[in-house]
Image (cartoon, rainbow, N blue to C red):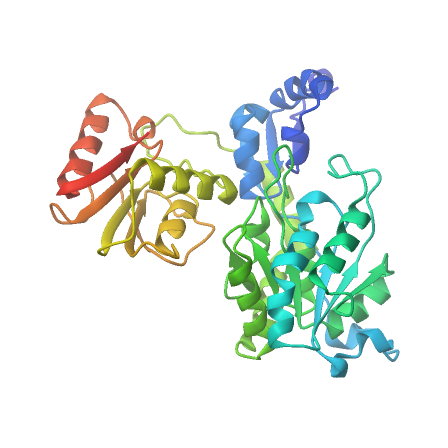
Length: 415
């Protein structure tokens, strides 16, 4: 139809339909998605997935979904049900369909008991129900898995299932909640494209604690609208929740509302119109170095563990580690927050595409030259960077710089 009338084509992509492992779907639809003139992705992670799949030839913009902003005077004024009475104890909230990647059973098993140990009256309210029509729901009976986790952890008096709620009922639940929990897991063949519920919670002034998985880091501003936690780190997840319940960071409520304003429908419309008016820019061929961030933090943690094992890093004296081309920051964060190894971590990149920020220092660089003295680092990591630095001469210069900043007895990882 577009060819018939000379129009451009664009597709809005959300993530899962790019990677879903259905042979017929991939055979039929991925070639179609690759032929669009441009694509708009709902998050940086989805844009990365789309580029890897060749969607729209890599001509991709990022426009986050929008949400309705909420004023305090718009809140429902009816008296809350007894289960929503915050005076009975702090309320944690989970909103969403019960699918495998949402990670609620694991949260109840590994994090909720730590929270209850410090706040014995804390309750988790679950809004949402089984998702029989989900493209990737995981186990056949997610409700059964959830109930088994509740019983196994002894959390029967601390978890309340509310099921589906109307908009007004959900607004009242948000009003009573101290924090929104979003323990999304990395599941092969599945992805959390964005994390819209975190923006909705922020619009109600409720901070979110979430694992930095998939597109979630685009929906939670760390230390502004909540906290991002390294995937699978349930101890830190519980600690962040307890920090909020202690009232140690009251600024998060105001920060959440402020952050949500950037996702107002009006701004969404402006950004969509702008993305459609100007052809999205593909990877340029003008010699300007671009970042090539892998934004799936789950895979970054796995890669960091691989590097740790291959280099034989073990507890002992303090180490200095440099990661060149840090991308999402996942590898630098892994080593900088390692529970056993004592590592001081520096990270550099030509663009700041980080999704997680704690545990290391970051410096933006303009070329292969590194702003560090000779022999400064015990460990140097260059993970799939050399193929992006330029021609053969630039690649040799990259290797020379890695060797220059490495200590005489140091070790390096080059992929």
